[in-house]
Length: 599
Image (cartoon, rainbow, N blue to C red; front, top):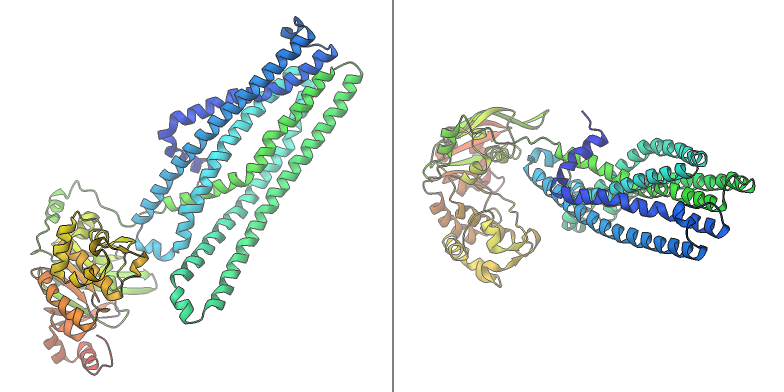
């Protein structure tokens, strides 16, 4: 069920629990600030009454005119100083609390985003995610710092001014309060319309960021295929849609500001007309009229400020809605309760390299309902066995790896590791037992050592030994500072083959039960691959290996070959057995010998 604005705000209010004292102080300060502000028009009015010899408050009756004016000036000066001091402290505290609030929300959003399955991220562009983590959270910070507390301050001021006006002259006071009714209704009427427009602005901004991010990531392809003009036109259309959405919010924002200004001036004119008539008839003093004129301006000041904050408030509520949508996104892949399977889970924590049985049992999977990728797949890999996966593009080889690592959940069937369903193994333990080397290696910004360690606790001396054993010494010598050499974003100062060497070293550090390699040497030159292959033989010793390869030499070395087509296991056996069988594998092997196809 959709949440209301109040429910969303309450939900995010839990992030303020650590700052309860600061929030309490902020709210308490609202009262003296409002009183200091409300007393100023009264003091000005009393000064005019003293000069004209009209009725004044009792404390001034006993003083001479000069002493009464001096007293009023001093009190007015002190009220201004008090208001400025309290407002300064309040503003600083609000901003500090707001920044801490948004920092906590952003941390939760990031953690939740990292825990969401790849299925969610497949349909959510990176640019749209960035918008939620950046501009949406910033909008929430603005609405808390300038909007929410400001609205409360305006409401407190409104109440104090209203009581003061009614106490001075209840008829004129009630008349001024009645003028605020149409303004309030108009604000509420505009709220829903502005909200829809602001949500559209956020969506268009997300699309704008997504387009920009996609073009920057694909800049090499854009330039090589001379797509600059085409992509510029597409980006221009996205920018135009964003501009039109913003124009819609500007219309509502300017409408409410103009309306409040018109009502405010009309109210002052009516007070002058009615009050002037009462003064001329002796029913009201000039000082009292002056007080009411000043109060009428102060009375509409909260609504005028509310109009100025209108954009921030509605933008913040839209941000709350979008942030809530992301936080409400369910986690598809989560750990099960460990209470009833504690014995099995303790067994799963055994990292002995001589274990690592993998069993797929009637597994079916599809990224989209109408396009099955894996169909009722069953196979078993014995501990220490070296298995090669072979098949045409789109046969489901990489998907098998993703399912085994629980990056996706199968629609049906079960996957077992050492006889334990992988759903019953804590995700952290499962992935610690699996060493994966992908074809496209991702390199983080930072130095080489940090990219090799990732989550492992290994010092630089141990890293150097592992790099020497895996054949990375020559690569480290090329780099200016060895292991502490800085790598640019996505490792752009390394070749594709060098990035793959780092990926293999990452896995060697972790000593996994099961080694999974998806075309892990495809970008290496023949000499580098041959040297690495000797080190990989040591890495694969007494360890289960699942290898996706298109080169015949790599496949021939496997203990067993699984041949896939359209998500189904159609052949199984050694290289010699499959060649003698004369099926799909034999055809692919023959074509590769002739240089006409890949396995």
